[in-house]
Length: 401
Ligand code: SF4
Image (cartoon, rainbow, N blue to C red; front, side, top):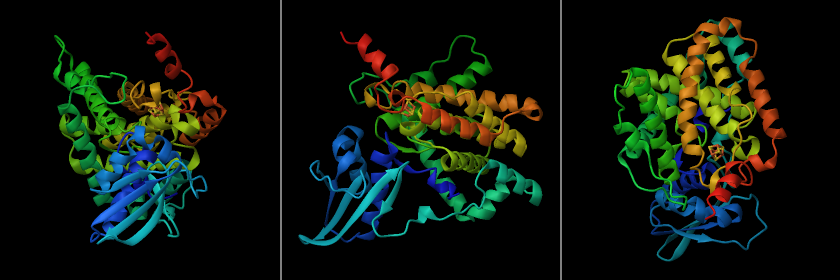
């Protein structure tokens, strides 16, 4: 398996391939030619057709300030459906031109260059191999991660955690209507501020976690900076729980980073053995994966055993199986934003069950992942991010007038 750093990518929402990948590419290209006095980026293929609505231009300008962005919808002979041509100029003369492909999940590939992301970091292929190695070597899951990833992982996770917290805080401070025409009003701030009469501590916890999940998901819908966890559509689940744990429950930052590392490993196992793409396997692959990762993170924070961590992640995925992807108008708003909050709460319930019942479990994490993948491949295309089925179909019909 590859490094878990490729699970968490910082960039503009709302789409990992249309905004996070291009943002990352723009940053890399700008960093290579800092002396250029002008940049031009041409978008081809899917990026040219849907990039306008998905905020690709904004993402590129955010990663490469001042860049001119051109949409070329005519060129068809492309090496990849999401192709970008970056050009740098000095004194009116072109000094560099590089083609970069946005290959999905926020990952990019630079033409004719080996990719850092291709490096195999984990010899283990699935969770059961991780489990047996940990048991054989008498190490815990965190020790395994840091042995294989090295000390640089910590710095990367700190950056990721800072970006996640920034998204929560920006989202809590914002109000108004989200872009795209659905007239969806931001709700994070009012959820955070509105305490009900005689509110119990359980209700407060759920309200705050929901507020944080809405905050991040609304930032994603507003095309602002978020972290894929593991995708943009599901980016609110993990930050919401970990923000609550640090800021409302007092868990120290170093433990939050450890939890993030274990969540990343769970996302990595899913990505390697199944899919984290709504277009490939429906929302179970996005929100189900985020829920599973969040459950593993919380189980780690609570100091639970590797078996309990695995079971928490398994429960969280098992009860998202079959979840369809049906975003209304293709926008990552309905049902996506609310779904992030519900998944965060479900992750907590999964941890609570696993604490008590892990010794009686029958289904392994690897089995549930295999099930999710098969279910996703069996799913009618209408329910795999095409906006042709489910809420995407029913909702507009009922709001036609
Ligand atoms: S419904 Fe689709 S777009 Fe929305 S979060 Fe789920 S997978 Fe992503």
